[in-house]
Length: 193
Image 1: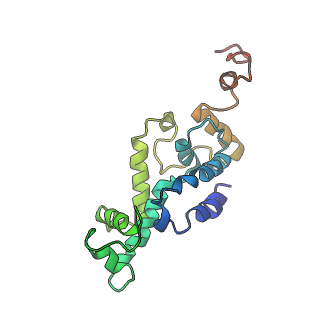
Image 2 (image 1 turned 60 degrees about the vertical axis):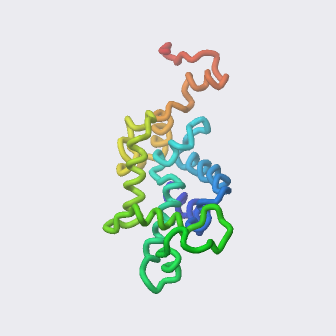
Image 3 (image 1 turned 180 degrees about the vertical axis):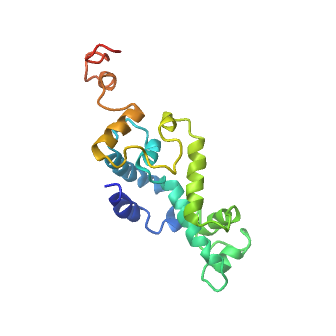
């Protein structure tokens, strides 16, 4: 399931991403990707969508979009390619061909200017994800220290779902059931609070 998600859902959702990823309508795709990640991880709806990619071990959609823009823009810097003239001219030098508020060329120019030529776009995206994860104050950082390591228990599908629910603190626990109005008290069957 974890392999099928990037192959089917992400590839369909991110088709031609460098062109449209800065559109105002990209938020319409995020719920579908979040729902798919909830199925993969076994997480319930109250878990914030920001936690789903790290639990699934799949980069967040926004970072994948920037990586796709970089993957398209970086090779186009070679002379003789179609996008070369658009990417090498100064940002405000010529009028835009399309009435887009967030076109591809300025975004690609900005990413390429900050990009180290010694690493590939995938390594850059991994580095960015690690940097964003290091700044994230979520409680998941105690069990998942960085994005390079797979989530512990990932090879055990049933146990992995239970571990993800324990890590996030949202599951079929007495305290959650009480909060949702499905149990009469938050106390465990053993009597512990």
